[in-house]
Length: 319
Ligand code: DGJ
Image 1 (tube, rainbow, N blue to C red):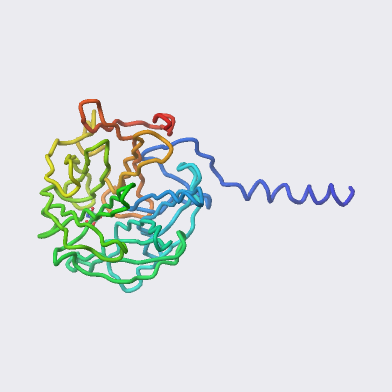
Image 2 (cartoon, rainbow, N blue to C red):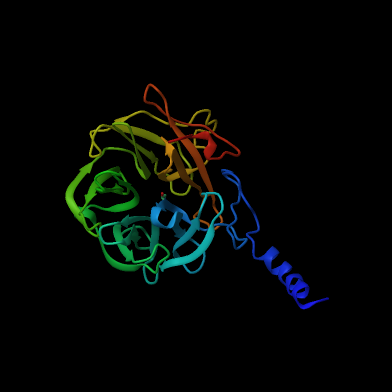
């Protein structure tokens, strides 16, 4: 065997085993979802951003295995994810939940907001951390109660045109309602524009369709699923009206056994919204599954979600 043939021969196993173990071509709601490292994705209660300059999606969420904190996964297609590791460890923070990351284009940095708390959810604050790179490390900058209100689960919305950002947070007396607060332009602090949306209770996700804002929230039942409710408004700060559950044929009336964490608008498609949710299975486990489903708004302005065992982005129309 000559030298070149021998070298090719030695490279074959490396090329085979360095490929990701699974090549997904779609979403499989409720199934175990493996990353490039062959392990189940551990990235709960979080959000996805698309970084145009890197042509890459980044998914952030709670890393519920060790070390606890926030994890990051990257992808080119939303189906196959590379584990980028833990981008901030919770360190001495007792409860670190529901991280959401936004890109601050003015300062070219990534800002993470999250639920900062004690072990009995009694501190009820927002935490904010920052990083120069999408894959971290994020550095904790501050933590506080927004305008003096208790804050637990959070959702985020960024207006694509004005770049104004908002946090919807489960507030007051163990999550009696959702409040909406506008961020300051630096994304690191809040304004006093902070209103009671009068919505139940946790897991807020927000989308804008034409001139209407849709807010989707779960009820408040710990790690057990419950029926979600959606609300609409023509101003993100409200007033909102309630429309009940958007889930169609949800036989157990529990949001297909899931709790929302974010609504991701997929770039490059028309009105393409992905419901991101956790299937906690009674506790916040590292291997709790995800339920990603397409969200549709009907001609008459109703939000609808249907179950699919498997689906992909071809369900949406391209721009
Ligand atoms: C429901 C919340 O949505 C979760 O993020 C978590 O805080 C659990 N409650 C804890 O019971």
